[in-house]
Image 1 (cartoon, rainbow, N blue to C red):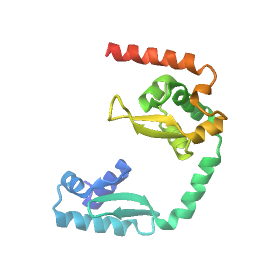
Image 2: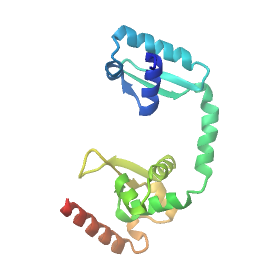
Image 3: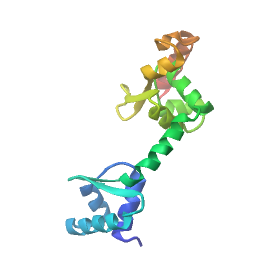
Length: 180
């Protein structure tokens, strides 16, 4: 059985985003005092590991330690200098030709999980995520002006065969929505 600090570490690592202190204490069945002790123990354990416990009044999150910033910067730079690759270009094409797409739509077209490609495109500023108008729980990705400039066009309508392919994608989406 995990100790409270170890369980807290596992939860924060698994989430990858800030979590509410109240939520964490409830999940771990800890009192406020026990939770504070678990946080302190985890913070002490993480010292000199390259990972830091970031804490606000209401939330807590795992992040890279400030001392690791130089190494993280080098990692990000190498990611940004790499070629987009086939997967990134396919993902960018799906977003461009559909006039925006959700991750599930991209995955369906490509037939594989596209989360890594989406992350790369987001990091490079080629796409941006917005709330999907049809389903507020999803994110719809669209091209940025940086992507248009990278492609050498002023509007996505200037893509080769854009109108034809968008019409086909819209018809297919409407047919899928109607069958649900």
